[in-house]
Image 1 (cartoon, helix red, strand yellow):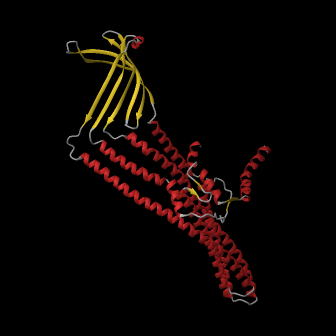
Image 2 (cartoon, rainbow, N blue to C red; image 1 turned 180 degrees about the horizontal axis):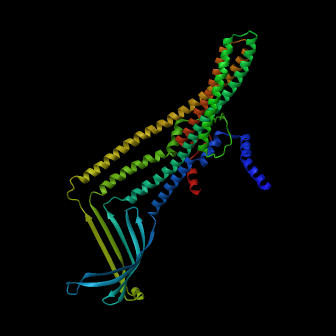
Image 3 (cartoon, rainbow, N blue to C red; image 1 turned 90 degrees about the vertical axis):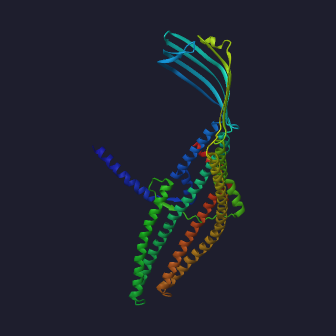
Length: 496
């Protein structure tokens, strides 16, 4: 019993000890680390992986349509007992009781013809019939070998158009996956800076609360000596209370921002996070022409333009092929034989030929053929106009992002310098206030300008990094390392 009691006490103390241990830890998290974690384990990326895998297997299904298909078809058995009309030798019909079982198997190898939309096939078949009434008998028939072709004439060739469209659709989905990953980088950067701004605001609030407490104590001493008026002391006391209120509000904002970031990164522990200010700025230049060239080469939207145009043309071809003259050709050649025993089926087989050409010509359709064709042509013209406008919008977006990126880089440098100046000016003002050289109003102004400059620098950093990852998203190119982004990542996910 003493041993069990000690074990229970140890178990109850374990969570508290763990919490104390976690409280002493702190995870330093930089922006590249956060983006790397999101790319690996965020729920959004897992969704993108599953979507790309789905599209990949759809593409594999499409490719299988152009490969030989081997199939075995049979009936084991087909039993029928009924009274049916039976044609007699003189041509008359009489009702007879039939009781029979039919068993057949057929092994066939077929191959689609993408160029014409037809199908060639060859195979072998075996059939057995067992009669149970009026007398019991068995017989076999076989097609030891046959070869044939089925061909649709003057019709829409779906295989031919799929061969043009489906590879584009797959390439589009591969690039969409990489774009989605870059979009995750952009979203994580936004969440990271939301939390980082809250962290900086908390640091400012903590520092202001400490400074205001110190200044208030100094002011109390000077008030007791009669060197300042009571109004100035009350103003400092109000500043202390406001600073404490801002501190509590900043703590709440930071907790909310970090919670959202944790969910995006897939964190499940309670280890405190300390975000690192990403002030190391990559140095590279981007020309609008090179950015547009990479965007045209890598973006899924460019492939989508070509796919949409081909689909519109395919619909016009479908309207023309399904409303005019339609014909179907089937031709078979093979060997056949019937016997009462299986070995005799393959002795001296006879030739078997089959040719059929069926057609359908619409004579009066009340303008249906013309209206369907004109509708498809109108839709094609609409798609062409939309694609042309989307191309212009696409290029303008890239141009504007390059320009904005350079502007934000310069603004960030100015904000960095303003932050340094604001911090230095506040320290000078605080020291001058403590020795009585300036009043509380000048000190308050210096503190506000210092806080505004620090937040403005953090916001400038946020805008720069968002523009940086948006530029990667629009071009799928890493300008810092001078390499493309859409080459391997999308294919590696298929091996996970």
